Length: 136
Image (cartoon, rainbow, N blue to C red; front, side):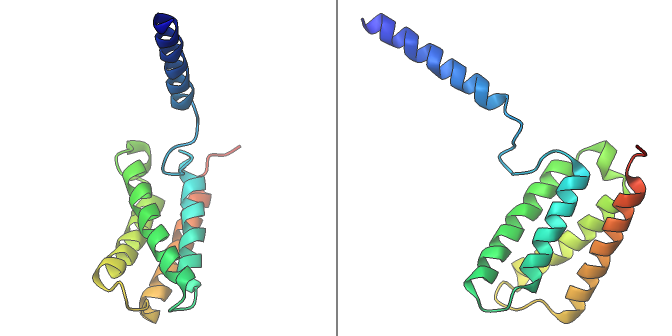
């Protein structure tokens, strides 16, 4: 009986590992599609930037933004097909500026100058993504 139970348990564990490794979702929440992930990150960051200061939602959004920035850079920095794109370089510049502020001044609001620069860079990234999109 013990052998049967051990055999059944090993089959069940093997099947669950196989099924979870085949799933398309990544633990970071990124889809693997650079354009979609970039636009989703921009939307998320705009929300985090625009929330009023001193609210619980703002601190949660900032924490989530830090995590998403790290995941995004980790996912795409080493992909040669993405790393040379102007949209990625501009996005990296924007993310470095925002992450730098969050780590250096975690309790201070974003300066208006930085907000304007980030918005300008986000628009540049969106424009670059439109130009870089493959023709259908």
